[in-house]
Image 1 (cartoon, rainbow, N blue to C red):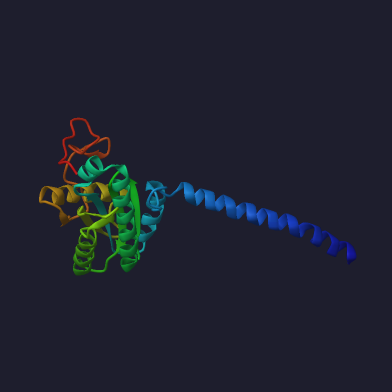
Image 2: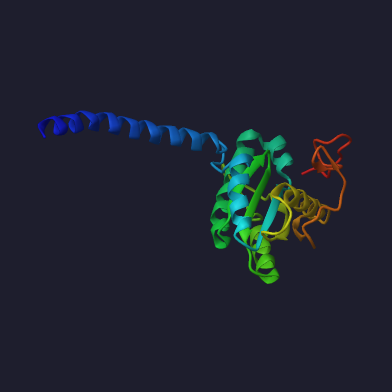
Length: 215
């Protein structure tokens, strides 16, 4: 009996050490899957979580591109641009729980989201609310920056296309919104209608010959 108690006592510090090590490892992994500037998850972590939301029923995929961000960044400096990105991330984080959603920063001034929606009316409401919260001015060092955003949204369900296809369709809708001066644009179906180059919409920045409207 005394031998057993001694063995358990000796093992406790080791077990505690492993628990602490495991906790630290998990935190490092989580940090690596988050954007260091905004704290939002990155593309890979988003893909995993978004797939679970879509698998659970009717939902919507959004792609968001900020308007006038480049002008603010070029005119007022990267610190001002970073402040805009952090403010955008905070607003997205507050908006997403209304639809049990997840948001991510894909890079630059591009963000993505997936939320649950139960009807076309709910999708319109969520998209309008999202476009609205992103038009509020951002304060930085005594200045007020009005940025705005172009939001593309596409409805989907568990029997529809995969997330990559839905993001391409949302990207098309986002571009339509940007061509119309910003705000939100709802796709009329989940299937992309434009040609792609290396999995990206033809004409999009980063594709051969891309000449997308400046953000």
